[in-house]
Length: 333
Image (cartoon, rainbow, N blue to C red):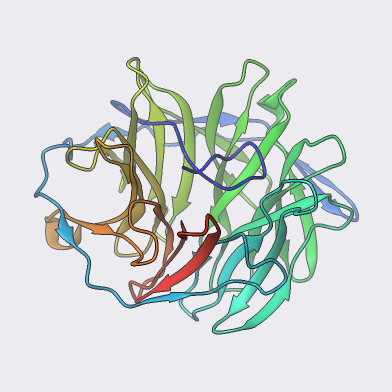
């Protein structure tokens, strides 16, 4: 499910491998109005931690689900992030003709506030923190993607200078220190994850030795980063860079594991694909050094569920496909 480079939903088909590093890059940001330029810096060397592939088996979720769809387009909604105040980031519209992506913030159950980059054709709001910052990406008239942040009423555009002839930059998560994560796609179509200081505009690339198509999807207030990459066998694995150490993981029996968010307890959420090709959400709880997986399916979308965000209270947001073929947002707690 979930892709990042187009505007028809956020399904994912990429993964991770052994050892992660952070490599400095020259960063460029442009405020609206105005602009700023900042040089990147080298990131810390990472130590590889223990693999998490051999973890306790999955347990079934016992959550209460609420479907939340913007009435502006009830046929397609994706909820992508939730902060500790219960405010939710998302968008409606499939991206097909007549259904452009339009970003919003939602204070449940039905207080929607539009958020769209000025002059954009389409916008997705992908993440938010507890201090008023939202991040996401927008598409211009050519279909090119640009990352953005909205802080103190000011939009700022971000594009990693290593993008080259590539046309995709997307911000996917942000913490309370205004450190964001995301990725760019180069001219060869390969994805490169990065850490971005929204204040200075400095980019730091996340590198997974032996892996390609890396996407950094979530960051918590400790600076722990989660994401996914693809190995030589074209398999997608999740990873977590935590306290200077790297670990990789996959949901037991899955063919594809894609982390999409992390909270301050290092609880990772995302989606996995089972042997039958069905997509399920997951949570990976790592409290007290124990690894506990939970499989998550909205009752109205069993086998079509993605968990995209989690806050520090364990509240989950995401989306599923219902029996009518519509994509619906959900809140689970």
